[in-house]
Length: 591
Picture 1: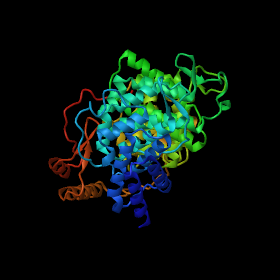
Picture 2 (picture 1 turned 180 degrees about the horizontal axis):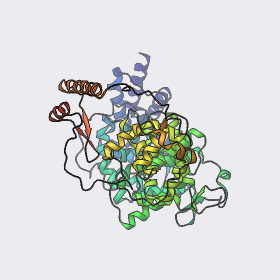
Picture 3 (picture 1 turned 135 degrees about the vertical axis):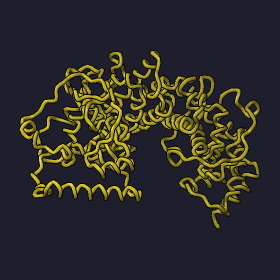
């Protein structure tokens, strides 16, 4: 009851129209509600009334302290997704954009299209209040001709972020007001030290929300506003990158230093970089699925070099470093495949991991990152697959990468007594994933190992066992053996002495040498064996007719197909019956 009385008192003070009374009331309200993120239903109408009054004040000439108090109140009210009606009109959003310094000429209330009516269902987003936090700022330039308090700018930006996060009407109005153009103009000043961290962070957070929630805005930033170059420059400035050579990067001031001597990125640098990476992910989401021209390819290769720099950089703490690398790996997966060679571009230096004369630092970092996620075992589809997919595609198109990864994941086979899925090596962990309950996870793990085996069925079975490999082989139509259509260089699968000696005793299903088991049919006559076989056929037939199972058989094309009722009849009459199929002239032989 006391809080309701306080809110009514605040409204009464605002209705007087006097700045001093409003300032005192708003400062008390803001202090009390600053950490409030849940709101009572009973006060909804009062909060909406307060929002209307505050916006009325914001359209007047105000003292700096009263202006800041009004914007702080709007920020608090914008957290309540059920009371945003006063804040999502064109007039209100235009006012907030003006104070944020991102209003675009020609999109004010009098010139924009008709107001979007009604509030639609709220949208989810990232973060409770658009990452509110950071340090207050000092006076700085909004444009060459005017000064503005950066604290005012950041408060307005936070309010707009909250509105976009919770309300579809607000998102539509933001698109209509072309806020992406306004914020992009300020992002062009990435090398200007004038802007404090909080303004830069919320500029990026606003851009992330606009591109995450609006497909049209995403396309506008990517194409019309040259978003890849714009955000690439942001990363360049944030991380302090210098370019000693084409597509080769280092940290400014640390040229020639070994990686272990370069200090970690500051918390502020990491925050800004991760926001930039998330925006770039939004606007490049479909890139890997389409062809890019020569100019675009050059842009993506430049971005790839920056991402390699991110991958090789450390943040302030292991947890923050992993989060930073996670965003980097996610974005790497969007790059066109031919541009991934930038990961191997840097020259081999002292302390680098070299393989076949190529710098494998970035590939090794990807592998270590993937294994960390694998060991954690949490939400594998979201956390593991981006890195695993990246390694798979890199191995598929770069011979040196594939051979390096194979040396790490599938070294020459020596232990022929332990099942492939048992143990703590990276090979063991990946083979276990091949029978994971999540289809995407098991398919991705199998694909990675299959590519490392140059898509050779015999080699794949050797390292994983036929039982583990059967799912991928069935999907590819390779259950009869052979090799898939990938193009790989010729190299030999070096066999160890241990494997060569035990090869004939290895059970191909399990992939290991097993103790000899007694023959269950030993001592049976041929007639008794036939009787047992017929019992089995009849049992399958009964289960099939009752739709409890669907018997399958291996076709001549290497794929599984249903056993039809006619096939079952023929099998009952002749257990050695093989269904006839047209000859497949394209069947592959083992090479």
